[in-house]
Amino acid sequence: MTATMGRSGGRVPAATVNSFLRIRWRGGAGFARFIAYSVSQRLSLMSPESIQSFIAVGIGFAFAGALASLYQSVAQRPASFKLLETRPAPVALAAVPFLIFAAPFIIMRNTVRGARLEDRRFQFVMIATVLSGFWSMMSGTLVVLALRAIGVMSA
Image 1: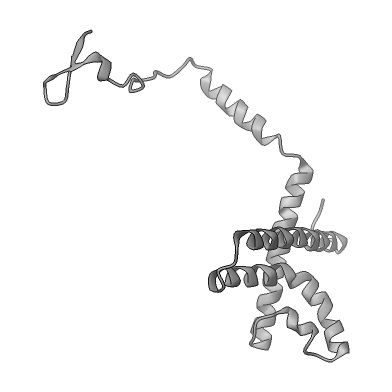
Image 2: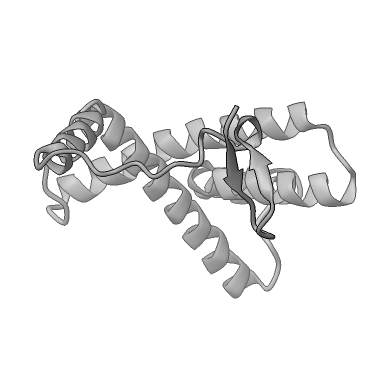
C-alpha cells in the first residue's frame, strides 16, 4: 500500500483517497456535436399535438384569470359559483357562459385558499388541480378555435 501527501503535510494511506475525485479530460472534437444532437433528438420526442395541448392549457388558464380579474374589478367582489344560486333564473343563466370559461381560475383559487386555511388533504388538492387543468385545456381549445375563426391566430 502506497501513501500520498495529505493537506496538513502528513502521509495518508492510498486506500483512504476517494477514487471518484479525479479530473476527467474532455473527449475528442466531436463530443459537443453529439450532445447537441442528443438534446435536439430528445426535444423532438414531443408531438405537435402535445405542444398544442400545453398551449391550450396555458391559454385557458390565462383567459380564465383575465375573466375572473375583470369581473372582480367591475363587481368589486371575487367571482364564484354562487352566481348560479343567488340570482334570479335569467341572470343565473346569463352567468353560465362566464363561469364556463372562468371556472379553472375559480377552482384553483378556492383550492389554494382551502389548502392554506382548512388544511385540506393532498389528494383533494391533486384532484382539483387535474380537474382544473382539463377544464382549462378544453376552454383554451375553444378560445384558440375562436381566435382562428376570426383570423387573429393562424394554424
